[in-house]
Length: 204
Picture 1 (cartoon, one colour):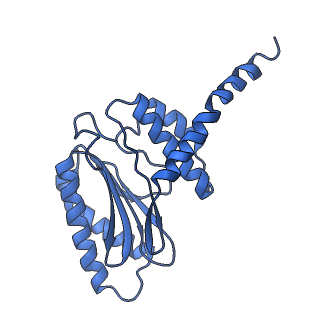
Picture 2 (cartoon, one colour):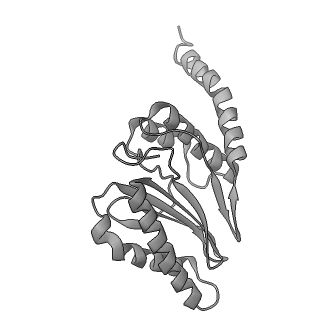
Picture 3 (cartoon, helix red, strand yellow):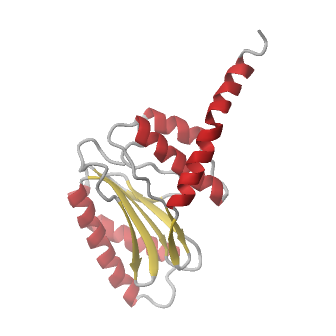
């Protein structure tokens, strides 16, 4: 997803990366040149940190290193049309997800939509479909469904849809899984709206 003032949505916006054995995915919305610059600088410095780290790095240590890297660039990033997500699995204590919203870099556990997160359709769907601690299958389905709706109804968004799952020792491309999830949800979508109307007026 992208800003209307940024690069076209057909440009690559999501990148699976291996940084010194740490599996990561970097995704951004906004200016393509700036996104590539931030990605390359961040992962180069994170690579240096991981090479000199002792044994396994905890998710908290990785967060601190990533935050320091991004904060070093904040003077040039603030107020520019760029958002990004960084997903990583640095050690056995689990995956971490970070969000740069154009001003600050924070760890997050929430469903995060880049570029068009303030769009009313995206807010409506995410607030009603997403719950914390969803099973993996349902979480992937919700995310894929939101992206599909964005490609149809939000200006500046379009296909193809890419999906990745960050696991211990692996970044797995799951485009087929996401496509099947979209098909399943869209298949039942109309019947859900029909039931909504029936229940609303069943007293008549």
